[in-house]
Image 1 (cartoon, rainbow over the protein chains, first blue to last red):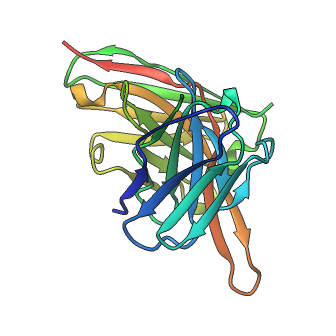
Image 2 (image 1 turned 120 degrees about the vertical axis):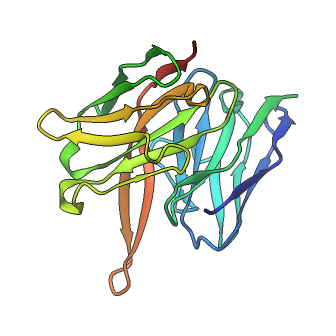
Length: 107
Length: 130
């Protein structure tokens, strides 16, 4: 199975900050990488698919990059509604695997 | 409106069984692969399994942690997917989500198929406890 490792596991930031979350795969997954946002008590929400494609309706302050084993999710200017937990997920092979999550908290 | 609604969760004793349902609306269910993902309280997301469409022979796949105990099925006439859970363990306690998997194709000469889960239900809670 492909292991997905996110860093950091938690992060404190302020409104307006630029934030980057990293996801590393245990083997090359090309661009088969998706990012999700989850708020407490809610279902995950798709943000980015295929490493860098923005899902319809998602604000442009979110962006994704990377290929192979290393990927990043960037939020260019944090807004109050962005404080949540973020997960990466590989779709290169079965079983689908998720990163352990990055909790983004208000500083 | 594209929507998924899970139901069937509840309290069950270890060793017991439970069947979850996922009712879909607002899209062509029969053409979509459907996945189940679970989340224990305070923990991350764990993929449970998936079922593909009729065009792909309703192929199923499961996480190692549930293989042999859980079965995913679907009834396209009812726009519903199911998760039959047998021999339940305390570690199966979680919120269970069903999701729609989308396939995006890039490239013509050498197509690449990208998969992602774009629609999620609100989840149903399964508690395995004596």
